Length: 70
Image 1 (cartoon, rainbow, N blue to C red):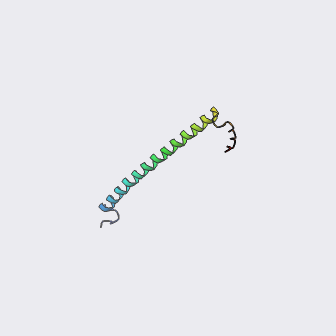
Image 2: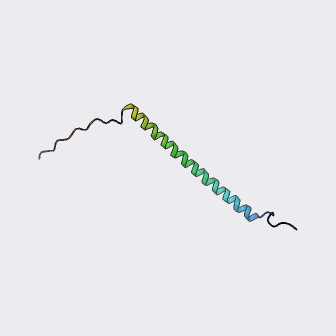
Image 3: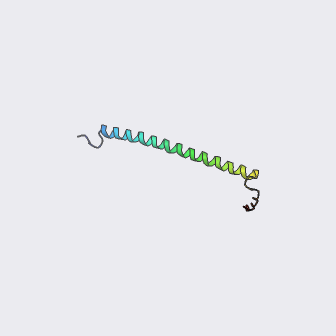
């Protein structure tokens, strides 16, 4: 007698193949988004370091404006 749990089920095979495609696509999208986010963070951090060492972070004191007499 054949064991029904070990026989091939074509519907299960189709369903698992489809699920595998969807999950692969979702994983690719998530990986791409994470890489974009990391690249953006690194570019921002590099800009902050360059601005700090070049003295851009220290702004000259602003002059107070006199009120206009009208």
